[in-house]
Image (cartoon, rainbow, N blue to C red; front, side, top):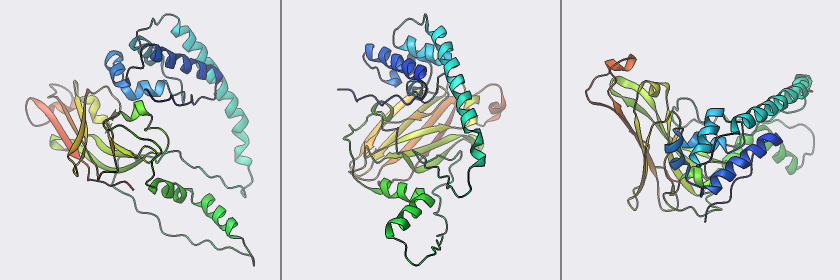
Length: 311
């Protein structure tokens, strides 16, 4: 049985209805995995999944490729896309007009931004160190413990996120080798627990491998995050896999590089530490900046993360 679809995350009614119809097309086609759709659409699974999320309106070429990958006719979709785009633009203009006086807010009102997921840096440099402990001086003779806790959470929202992420409990049972996008594990609270850079010959940087962890799913998966150098490699192939040394379990995924993130399969964290790896291969370029790279035949880059237990 397939997983229950995530609620459409759209503030604009027209966009929500548009996305609901895209999802209906996929359901009528038998809910093919996004990876299978990517082969037909020539857009990455990540791009297609995002198009059906409702967080933003996908480009028209992506929408048409999505529809065609579901085996449906694309007639009528361009005009509807333009109508939705106009509605989204009008909503954005109205929102900006309403929020423009935000700069006049009282300085006494704390503005706290609590991210839904931990941000991934553009070029990971390893695990960051927690900043120096800050001392909160509280005046007054009596201050309740509830007030102290509330103040701490407002000033340091990351500490609460860290506590919940460290909890080992899992609310879902995930099949080993599942796709994190098809299961929805890539949504919600997700963190990067390890990373490593990928270099081709002559220190040509092609991207990095991230080991991602979703506490609610009790699982990790590898994700290849490309650098700008990947655009210079035509016909590249990406392989991502995850291994659990404790029992030798491994899961591998191979795909042509389609210009976006590449998600590997998941393994559960309850049986031992997990490590991710990525290999990128491409025909040796005959022109352009990368033509001077050493070697013959194929460009090769490989990297592995350390073996990590669940936080």
